[in-house]
Image (cartoon, rainbow, N blue to C red; front, side):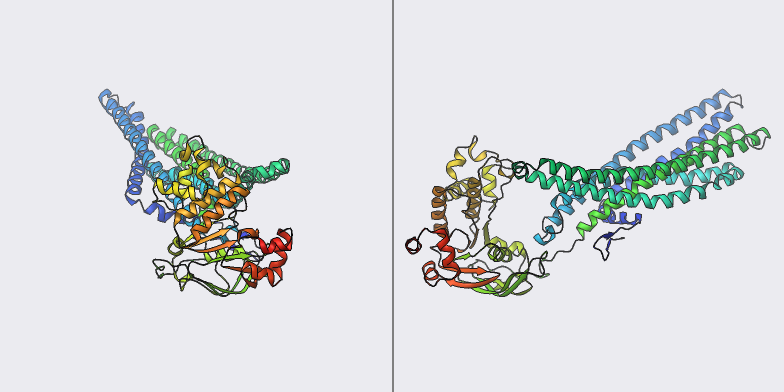
Length: 600
């Protein structure tokens, strides 16, 4: 398949080949039986369409025979041919549209299956809205092609060839004159078709960008409104949408010009040929029926030629959409499972090892997020990671989940290096409570059950009670069956966080990761959740990322990070006593030195 290539300026060089549609072949060939049936129906309707002019010729010439019985048979035959054409066309439509819907559904699933497993590094380069545009808008274009345009293209191509052959059999002289027009038609199809292809791809790119802008603004609509940036968002979305329209307008203009040129050349040629044919009839070189038959075949060929030129533009447009979808299917990921993964330890103990780990985020290759970090956490140990923003604390959790791979160094879980195991396998050993709780548009029960899909309702409720979430859930209109809305719009920030904590508790994983898990809670809820976390952590390895030092005082160990390195290690009391960064952070959060030492 013709693929895009990256140019030196970072832009993408677009292919100009309809061959991009070859990316659809694996999906179509998965339904060979349906494809063969559709092709057979298509061939039957095309052949029937070519037989119909012969029936008309018989009827026209039958008027000159004077036999009413023979004329009746010709009319009945013509009706029979029309009936076969109607049935074949209906069957062709059903089979082709069914095949198109099936193929597009498979493509959508394949693309989603691919992108849902991509590491966060992929989404640093591609906006989520653009991916959604490809899954929706681009697949809609492909549906039009597979479910209609390709079938229509093949049918008209068969009619073109069949009509040409029948024209030769009817009158080689007139056919030769018609063929003189064909080169004049093909040249603009090739020349202008390439421009249509380029403009179609550009149009789809701008549509994807507009979807990305809309998704970004709508997902942050409260922030947009709070800062009175509605007009700016409207202007940005409007500008991108107008660029998409401009590209579409240019594409439509080129296609319109192409249609005008082809139709004028084709029908002008036919009129000239018919003038010569009429003279042959007057000279008794051919009969009126033969001329009518030739005219019908010429009209069929002219119509199919015009249709082919229009469909070619649709195929060009769909080629761009196919190219974009295939790019996603073939997108390489920086994080992959090994060909022969080692089974994750079972049962998992939760020992964590970082050995001289160096890591750079893909978008910041010159700045090390972690620089030579080494530590070991024993099973069941509670370790807090503290330090200023950007020090590398959350990066530790992301590497432990293998959202990214380090540039160098080794990360192991229970003695097995993470890259040696399947990601889905070792991630079952980890429960995460992120800083920003993720709430799905589902019931409270199912949002918590997301942590362990096979959990019973009683286990879900027990997890909610442990996370101090049972009270507010029970107060919802339908209790645990209440829908929480998109992104948990019905809940406060603290309530969302408690749902996320309940989800992690339910997971029953040997490793618990808390990334600012109590940052959105009020004092009373924080105390309740902190007690639940302490009970939960007794049998689990727990990593706590926190800015609020009051939440980490009871940790077995505290690792102090600064600029991607561990600069201190110890308990709360020992770190406060030795001074340094941790002591300064603690002094900022407590009102006096005595409270720093006495805080328990």
